[in-house]
Length: 100
Image (cartoon, rainbow, N blue to C red; front, side, top):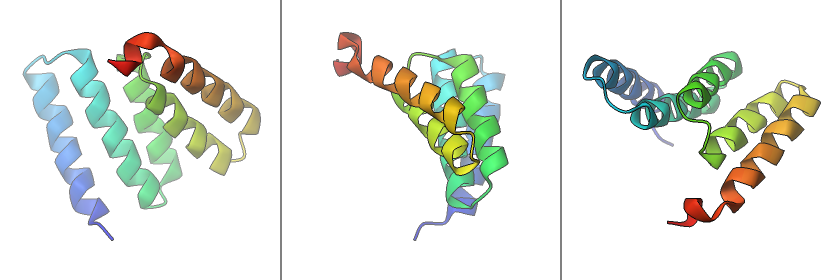
């Protein structure tokens, strides 16, 4: 098993650096997503959801952000909202631009 707590710290630092250096929103979104993954693995579902929301605020075009948020919502028994996120994930992952 990985050291999810350490990875979470590293992604938190990456978020701060990316914001300080005014990196593109897509980069910041990736860091938020990966921080969300660490929270998910640690069983911190509310924090994971917050990070996936922040990832999507920065970039709504990445299908696996939607999928990850759907996973958390399904675990939180927010089934209808999870289904909507899964539908959006399928839509984004089916777009030709995603394949490049």
